[in-house]
Length: 244
Image (cartoon, rainbow, N blue to C red; front, top):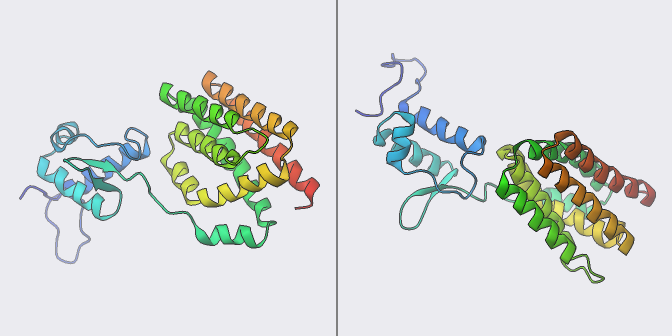
């Protein structure tokens, strides 16, 4: 029997002990949590995972089947396994609360200020070349949409903040941001079409986002956090002036 208990047989009535496949499943999840394997990315082959973890392919296969059943992994057409890219659905209840009462945006704004400042710091510490390129591309998309009829300004703004999340290499933060993605889009639509919608505001927003990218690219965690806080504090000032 390949998938043996790591610490020997289990006595009657005793709690089940960890199996080798349990350990393999935990190791795979740690790879995802550390950013070593990103959402949507294919896992190494069963043989390679077995070699990396020092276990048999049978234990690896059992672990992967368990993670598939739990919704963490799915099969790739033609063979192989990958981390599920869409780890959660947007929260419709939160989006409805925002639609029904705009004052709820203030609470969300306060939470964003703390989480996104933390994410910018982490991004400065962890971003690799691909992350920095993705941030530059997101910034360029925002610039392209900062026209007098900005149909996609909010969408480009959401994409920018998702790029910061990916650059942070925090799977937990990326998961949280995906949960509120619909509400974030609702919030940024309000920001860019009502709260601060003038050409001057657009220029300020672009400068703030460029400062964030510059700090992340330079690896300056303090500057990245400060740049994100500066932008979100400026946004909260607009809330106060609007009476929200």
